[in-house]
Amino acid sequence: MQLSAPLTIAVPKGRILSELQPLLKRVGIVPEEAFFDEESRQLTFGCKDAPIKLIRVRSFDVPTFVAFGGAQVGMAGSDVLMEFDYNDLYQPLDLGIGRCRLSVAMLEKEAAMLDAAAHSHVRIATKYPHITSNYFAQKGMQAECIKLNGAMELAPSLGLAQRIVDLVSSGKTLAANGLVETDVIAQVSSRLIINRSAFKTRSTEMNALVAAFREAVHAA
Ligand code: PRP
Image (cartoon, rainbow, N blue to C red):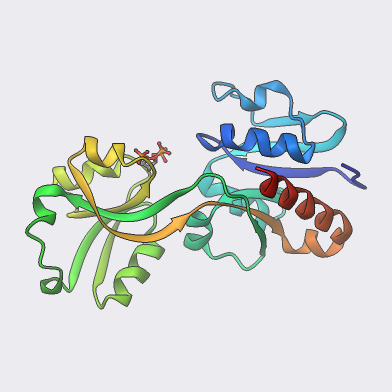
């Protein structure tokens, strides 16, 4: 890839790395080997034959790194983008990876007895307070969100909150904790994001990058 200046790309660590690997290969970005090793504590990774630096950060931090110019490009889940709603990000492409859904779930035994209309106020454990309050507000319900950063599947059985809002992929985590999905709030996938000012100042390169990713996604 022809670049006039170094480029930093922020990617979320975790499960998505294995899905990202073939996509990067098709685009011609070849990171050093440690990048795909989830055990590696390294945070910055060089690439072969291109002035590209990949940084591996928490999924919730990718948009922040890109919006504030720490990275010009990133790959972020649509769930995270919905939660933060940054104006300084351009989202040109659905990468078609990291597919899952953002759902409401509750204990199976309680879901069976639920009279949704009877509740105008609900308490919900989630990493997504913004999306959650908007979703329930649309249903005429007030959501009191208890912010957790993980393991929210524990919250209903421990009495923290009757419901949770979290990502569901295979559904195994819900089932293992006696929970069932009651609503799907949104389908989720990873998006290519670009810092708006980088998109303007390096428009030819950024357009070429988007085109290369688009082709790679279609070839998948
Ligand atoms: C996510 C999510 C659920 C789980 C759902 O967590 O928060 O806990 O995956 O996946 P499943 O439906 O296939 O069981 P993840 O493992 O990514 O870790 P996190 O809690 O650190 O986000």
